[in-house]
Image 1 (cartoon, helix red, strand yellow):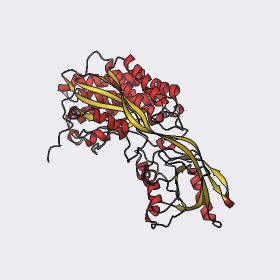
Image 2 (cartoon, rainbow, N blue to C red):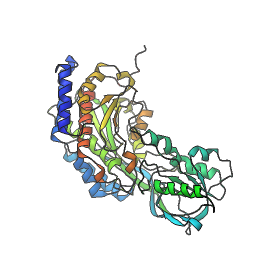
Image 3 (cartoon, rainbow, N blue to C red):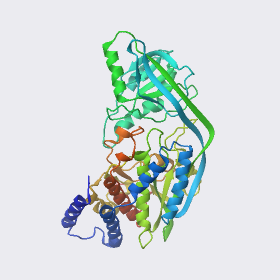
Image 4 (cartoon, rainbow, N blue to C red):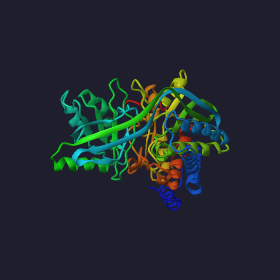
Length: 476
């Protein structure tokens, strides 16, 4: 982690001394020098990234997909991107079923009566007006729920206490996210009338984590409770005695004919301007915090990187396009999410083959620590040049090929567009993810600038290379 310009300069000096100051690739010397200059300017002079995060989260607060706040943020973003001098700025509108929470409450009743800190899952239906009260069946793991027999939960509330393991790359969340996405459906299939899970967080604070669950034909009201409340339920189970009973209450609304939008802008390339590099973050957020690390930070990082490139006296060879995707967070009837990402991909029908590579910043505001590329670029002159430029930032090479560039690149990946990844340190990301504590105070401006330095430098190298990232790797 490079935490300051002073440490960055020390790391840079070490790299220069070890390499004798020479260029990694003589034929690309000027491109590499420009990439290094972008990196150095971001670290030593700062970038607009923090200002962008501050503007979005302060002006609009939470930006639940399809709401007025998300729309106003997109309109402001369009004006802002135009003010930066970016080209072809546009707002791309698309339909959306808009889910909104209105009220929610979860409590233990009976001998153990006490309130719990909880939030309804996105896409979950409302309870009846007087709520749902039933005996709880507690499962330590999701697999325990899956192993439960059909009919074994009839008339009961399923509770899953499985913890999310902290990991730098977020793999703990990858292991538990199916509990939120599919758990309510699995519980309903076994007869449950309600579903509760331990929030998908890596902290011990009393915050509940929002997040989407799958819409289904037989939905049941579903909630996440804070990690300390999940531990409270476990202790009650250990004491034993009277069965645990819960009361669930929620009011929600669904507007089936709502709208959301993407915001798009670019720096147009020169002799290979038809070849497009897509970057960005998602503008929508959950409604508990202000969506700072998820994902105003990603919007800001990629926008600031493109702004730095746009300030250069020369244009890149390839076009670099930033997308502020809408509606990344919410699920939709029929099971599809990522509405903004699919809307963008559909709008590029006939042009997808011109998209050379794509990536999204959607893992908070921690420093970048690793680079991974499409397999064809591994052990190449391009990879060696990229690592020469990125190493002083504390970035290491990850030889595992990049299989995806983030959630909003999925439709592009499915259409054959490869991805690169600048992996961020997410060790504390799931402390705040989808909670009321996802606020501006969670962002370190120096870490944002380190991200921008890595993105701007790498994008310049990609945009000015002739590497065909879509090509199949050579057979050994």
